[in-house]
Image (cartoon, rainbow over all chains, first blue to last red; front, side):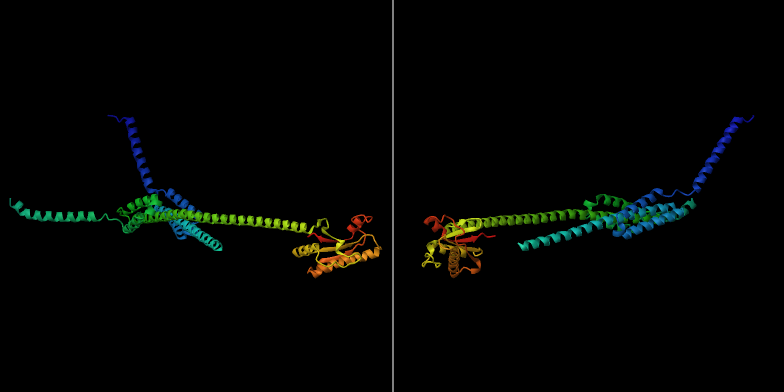
Length: 133
Length: 286
């Protein structure tokens, strides 16, 4: 019984493939998970929108909180704690969205106050005109 | 057979222990998946918002998102960091819903305010327009009154002028007093009242702002110097008469022209009579 050289070659290739796969799997496990780029971008966009909406003036604490979370998320990325980074990025985004919502509410309240004053002034004016007659 | 009979109670003890242990384990299992601490607070806040019809109207989508986040936060989870994260997210989403609802309510309120203000403004404008209209009306009527008044005044003046039998000329109203007022060669007014002079006095009293020229004229009988003096004296007589009747002397100026300005021929008695006259010129109002 002589060993079939072709069969031997196949066996070698099979062994090589298995080894290759094992190595690749190990390498994949060893490398850190990818940073949560999408969440980080979303957080940055939300913060930019909040600043655009003048959140610094109307909801400064919320905007500050969002910035703090984003900074912490970046630190977590640097430390390769990607799950934590993802959570912090999401928190930054939701804080920025709250800043926007509270800014809108504050602006609406300011406009209503202004309108109320305008209406009062108009009432007074009409009262005065009425008195003159 | 002895052993198994001996074993029986032992096995009963064992079974009891196993049952107790397993039941303990089971109850431990049943108790362990509790909602993370803090999720009740978020749920309470959300429930409060959900019971507010204003919030349901103006923040429907945000409340639905918040509901999903709260449900997730209520899921038991081993990792405390994840639990805290989920509660944070749920809490902020509830707050977002609250802010959206508030903004929506304010906007609705603003529309109402705007309507009220428009109504108020409309009322003010209407009132203003009414008043302007009334003012224009009264201005028109007073203008009409003024016009009617001046028309009446003009009419009255004309009537007076007619009564005076004066002639309207460029210099003013010219009233000619005939020589019948004076005795021949005399400058004295004849006694008794002269109707023309009375009318003149009335007219001058009615129009006190008019200046008067009194001009004496004669025919060509006698010397020029005599006639000039006579004409002037006759004019002076008329002036005295008017002053005596209460007309201010400052309004009256006197001149004598002798026979310089005849109005008719001195060749006939008739013409000479027409030339012997005193003309009273009532100047036009400037």
